[in-house]
Image (cartoon, rainbow, N blue to C red; front, top):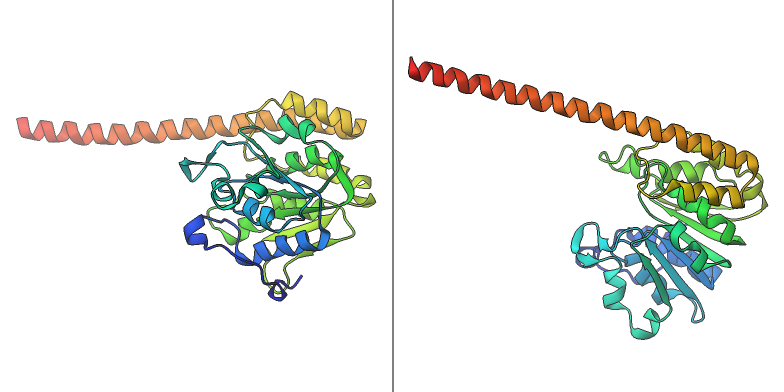
Length: 286
């Protein structure tokens, strides 16, 4: 997709803390205008820049459902999640916006319901983040629904985010006859449409979940297990159970090793400082 062909309004990122680049925003808005979805689900809101763009450009009879695990903006706890959209959108636009802040997607997907035809996932970017969001959302997506994944090359573009490969992995392993990226650059955003191949090859998603997780979710994974058992095959459910059991153990062990290493380093630093202090006291007394 050549985003240079599009020209939509773009907010000043320095003033509003919009976290999508201009090209990424043009990409989203073009697909939004092209597909004209009626039920839009956004997972990951942050400051609400993307929410603002959607509310300003979606069809008159469309609705936006936005989910974020936090209630405050992660870069400024004095700001609420979605504050950009709340401050800049008018009452008519905000009336078409349903928010679920302070909860995970699995906590509210039943309330959101079926018939989703446009999904944007922009969350933690580390394993297993976007994988879990996609697996929960998929049973509620229409056939031919458009799925947009942001930061698909964050681990490449940012030296501080080398473990942020979750989104690019999901984009790579998911099956679809139609995938979209921005041409002529290392695209940091991608999209695909849901079709028969997505469900036919869904096991690829569960297999990829065995790649090492950066964290183990704080929320109740038993609910995820029950959900997977309800909507996916027995084989997928079995693999999911094996995966989360092993990943929990591995993440716990990694954290224990890291914590022990930190303790050793702190002890050495304190021992060195105490030794130098003792030497100074000795020579002063002497």
